[in-house]
Length: 197
Image 1 (cartoon, rainbow, N blue to C red):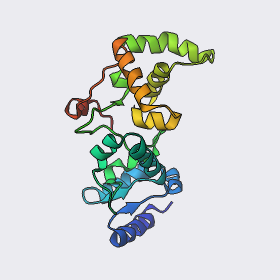
Image 2: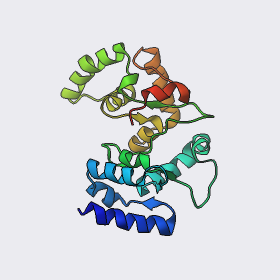
Image 3: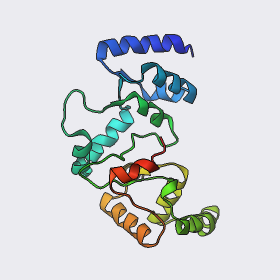
Image 4: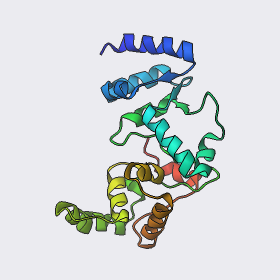
């Protein structure tokens, strides 16, 4: 790809719309280094509209956990679902998503591998990996533990991807905390040092 001419097209798009928009296919074609160049070029003064799959997710969230949606977006208008260009790299990850980790009025449920406590890591490396190897069915807690060991996520994206009830997932997190598998930091100020992006 000719990145210079691609960035020029995006400059024209920004001048017209006042923000950038990337289709799912554009994001799939861009390499991580190209994404970083785009971020560097537009950094500091550019918003990006969420990809269609993320907009669909947030419409699901609006229906399924309105208080969390309100905490993130607050109101509906033409500029909804616009985020900083810095988040562009989040949409080319293995599980592309806009991370929900900055809630103010609602408890945060964002987790990474760094949230797994030694007891949880021991279970993951020994018993859970053995279950995966023999293709044994995993519990909800085990599935979540395995997923955050590979890529950070919040419970809402996890629930949406796997069609799980949010209340059931919150109970699973409480159980994982009780078992000593996870640290659950609900306050965004405490969570900041765990962010991996």
